[in-house]
Length: 157
Image 1: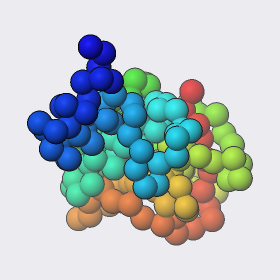
Image 2: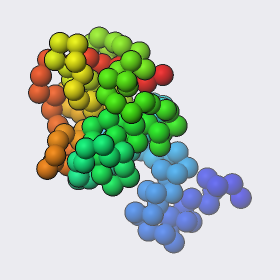
Image 3: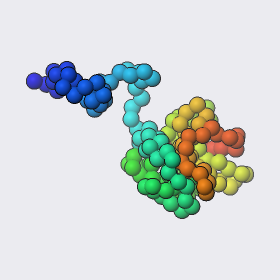
Image 4: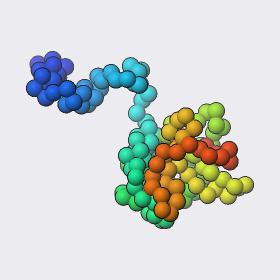
């Protein structure tokens, strides 16, 4: 009996929620918001999911996880867990990415906030003008709208 033939009987025994888990693991899930031609899972999309999973983690200057983060610590941690190596600071991370115009940005790209040539913040682009980031002391990892036009985009190679 193949795994696909076993799924219906497993679904009966396991219940609906577990059946959805089984379907997701087998790669055959159809759910609202997901197309049949779903985007391939790339290190960038994995990093985005990892950053989102850290929602509510407190900001701490110099922290690189797993429970506290500064801005570049969150991007470093997320991409490391996704199998990509990044340097420590936002400016160093910018220098290691492939720079691209806003019109070519995709979910999972890095968003670098700058004042002139000085890069002071980084987050992971989540789509629709939003980023996952660890903002500042007293705040937590969260999804937030990009609040300025003074940003550059970079794709982790």
